[in-house]
Image (cartoon, rainbow, N blue to C red):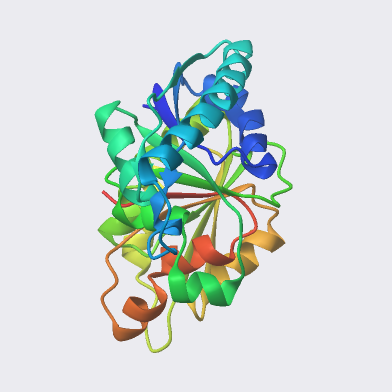
Length: 272
């Protein structure tokens, strides 16, 4: 299921710490890691004249190639095959990362998030949030300050009883069956709604045979999910990403977007 994953890097120290989780991916069947570094041209658009774009790209590529070689060596040491994308692509990071994943047949995009500050993230978004929204394959984002030692030890599976959440089921079950992970199934009943007990029971039946427990909360979905995450010492959050529909969602993002923005632990999002 995750035989080939794409690792998007900016060469920062927090980002490179993500490599420490690769042995765990090997345990669930990952064989190859495609590594992509994107030269972000958005940063120089509108800059003062005099910049030679071609020279800038070539200089960035020369610097990137030696760093990519170091990453490849480290991935090889885990017993995984590493494939760096060269020449290093230049352009919009979101588009280039998604393009690289598609062209290389990746089954998952693994990337980090620096956490530039909540206000700036809300106003401008982030590369990780943009990739999670636009990608047709699952995306796992690891925050730069995460303290978890293993990603899949205690999986919080957020389920709103819709198809957006159901599409994540196969990933949760696959990993739990491989690693014996504990699953914390969380459903939040929003204001003026009633608990759909029959639908929740159907979800629980799909998890029979696995180590799981169900927690039902009442309130705002992202707030309650993050509370449970802390209370249960979850090591990752699995959630389905839907298309923003309400005015609030269009302005601030869907529940998955907000979870990704505020979560202190890794977040796995599957949109389709």
